[in-house]
Length: 88
Image (cartoon, rainbow, N blue to C red; front, side, top):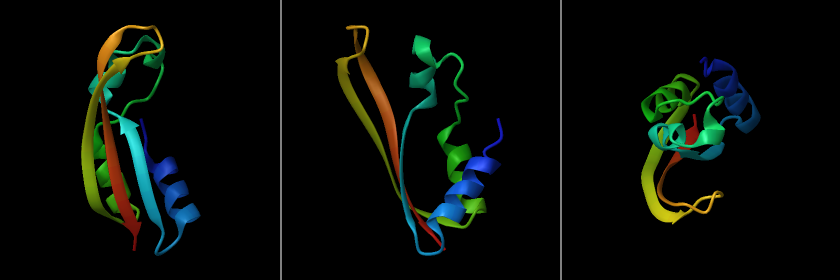
């Protein structure tokens, strides 16, 4: 899957000096969810590289885990990433 169109849209919409806070489910976690079968999932390092190529400095990254019930009522460990980037 190609990240270029999304990357370019973010860079255009935010403009120079803009900030982006991106929250996304970890790709391994997302693959475990039945509704995500048709999603185009990207590894965190590929997303970070795409942002850097389009003029963003990634200034912070956090991994977040929590155990909670999903929409199906089953308890599971959820894994998300939060990434903060500034457009040069």
